[in-house]
Length: 159
Image (cartoon, rainbow, N blue to C red; front, side, top):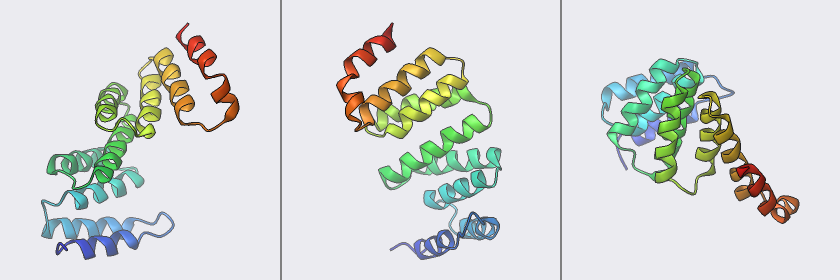
């Protein structure tokens, strides 16, 4: 196990009820001792985003991605956080581009399609956004009524 991992787990585990002030200071301290660990950068990004420090969060997300996260799940979560932060910063066109790339990389992750629909909507591409959201709903829902009328719904969405 990496030297930094138990410390990171303890810091992340100390989050309670959305209280993150002490977490950010501890993460920054850990990062200063282990500056090239993408998981630490990602946790800083999540914490900064939770605190509303979106510009700093975006930089931390980008740093984590550039350092190369060790698992696909960590990478997917970091890409989601980065895209949501871009949307919060009013950078919908960049979020659209980032999410389109993420969907290619993670085609089975419906969260990217849902976020992309939201990003397209915010970028003024409402027709595309609606079609993608409906498609995502149809692909991920277990509702028997939606399944029975899927072909009709898809056809109407294309009109």
